[in-house]
Amino acid sequence: MHGRVGTKRSDLEAMQRTSFGGRVICEDRALLIEEAPLAYKSAAAVAADLKATGVAKTVATFHPLLTFKKTRTGGLRNA
Image (cartoon, rainbow, N blue to C red; front, side, top):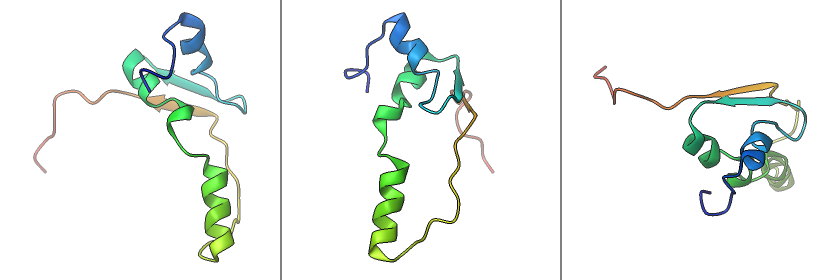
């Protein structure tokens, strides 16, 4: 996504809003770009494909109002 998404302030501000009015909170500019909505398939399209093949049915639709993204620090811990 780094090559496909601009790094202008207006581009970054646009990535902090979802298409249905939700907000994305992320202090890490690189992570915000990696997690841009353009990086993923449409959830509606995936659900439609699953419904069309008969393996799933839609029972509800959700829209996140707030998404919080944070870079993991400190590496992996032993369980």
